[in-house]
Each structure stands twice: as C-alpha cells, then as structure tokens.
Image (cartoon, helix red, strand yellow):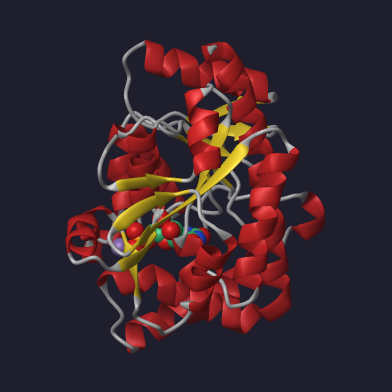
Length: 309
Ligand code: PSU
Ligand code: MN
C-alpha cells in the first residue's frame, strides 16, 4: 500500500470486500463552518452515509500522513482548528508535498481529498460545494484547483451545486471545457448551494441513483478519466432565497477586496464572512444540504458497488 496513506480498519475492510465507501472532505470542517457545529455536522454526515448503506471515510492529513477515515478525536481536532488557527493547513494539491514532507496537519480541499480518495481506491465523494471560477476571474485568474483536479481524477463528486460566491456560468463553461459531465439529481435547473435555483440550466438531469451509477460506470469504462459532478439541490424546506443571499455575497466580496484577500485565503474568507453575517439560517441550510448529499452519495455508492461487483 501507498506509504503516505493510513486507512482506517473499517474503511480498509469495506474496500477489500467491494462494499460502498463514501469519501468526505475536511476543509469544510476546519475552514468552512464554526466550532462546534462543524464537528457535530461532520459526525452527522458520517452517520447519514452509514444510514444509507455505505462506510464513511473522512480524509485529512495528520502529522504528514493522509488519513482515510478519521476517529471522533481527529474530527474534533480539525473542528477546533476552525477560524484563525494556523496549525491546520488548508491543503489543496499544490500544498500536499510540503505539508506531508514537513509532517504537518492539513484539512483537505475537494481537489486534495479526491486525489487521496483515489489513491485509496474510493470512487464516490460527498461535499457541500466545490471550488470553481471566481467572479472577476478574467482579472484575478482565480480558478480553483478543484476544477483541474476534477478533470483528471476518477472519483465522482456529489455537491449541492456551486455557491454563488463564484461565477456559476463561467464555472459551468469551464467544466464543459474540461469534459466533466454535470448532472443534476431530480430537476432541470443547476442548483446554487443555498438555493435550488441558479438561473442556469443543468447540462444533464437524472432522477435515480441507479442511473447516475450507470453514468459513472460508463464514463470510466469508456476510458474517460475524471469526475462526474452530481448536483443535488438543497431540500426545499431549507432553501434560502438567492436574492437574499446575493446581498451578503456582495458585501463579502467587497470586504475581501478592501482587505486585499488573495490566493488560497479568498474562499475561506468569503465562507466565514457569509456564515458570520447570516448566522443561523445559512448554517442550518448548509448542514441540511450536506446531510442530504451524504444520503444521495451513499445511495449512488451502493448502486455503483453493485454494478462493479
Ligand atoms: N465552497 C463551499 N464550501 C467549502 C469550500 C468551497 O461552498 O467548504 C472549500 C472546499 O474545500 C473547496 C475549497 O475544495 O473550499 C476551494 O478552495 P479554493 O477556492 O481556494 O480552491
Ligand atoms: Mn483560488
């Protein structure tokens, strides 16, 4: 086995026996939500994966090792790093060799999580929102490494679409350029994280986990590497009106500009600003949509495992 990996025994057993496993990221815990809700959510999301027949594997870097499947104590460790603590790195692909060779601690983004999941042999990954093309990227060149990683690593991703801190239209264009199928579960419109709407039609729509598993299986059997992005709309009862969110997003973008926030700090800054200014409502929606993604992701993983076996 890859010497950089430490696979939890339960995850290892599941992978060895061809059972459904769902990878989960850790940046969302350390840089995406406040403590202690982040830890409670991480635990609830793992439970939702189990309740729907799959084994959860939350991924993070601990003392220079890529851990696939975390203990409750490890989840707590990353949860406490929420906010300003710099003991825990936000690790995207370019940071991996440094954090690993220096025996540091890192919460993994979508890009790094899917790469580590792939090393471990996991094929389905659940998150909240992916990184993408930022607004004004034509000036800043700020395009998440999540997108380029999604083009090359064959792990399917379930997310609630793309948060409108990004330019959703440009992100969809970029996904098309990279040859990444984008399929929305159960509706025609591509969702925008807090809202079931985005104003953009989804490139594809499927209504069952079984058909999504067949799409994934077919893509990879054709030798087409890379992800399939499955957009799962937030449950209607937790949805926040897109126009209402836009006010907070514009304020967050202005604050980022004023403070000269650049590079890897942009996304965490925007997420924390919005979480801080919308308080309960956005956090509730965030938690609800991730749990729902975990349910759908587990169903897809179970169906994909049965296609494979
Ligand atoms: N978008 C969200 N929630 C998140 C993130 C993005 O709505 O938690 C996190 C994910 O870990 C994602 C990362 O992979 O931010 C993207 O960061 P960047 O834009 O710096 O690539
Ligand atoms: Mn960026």
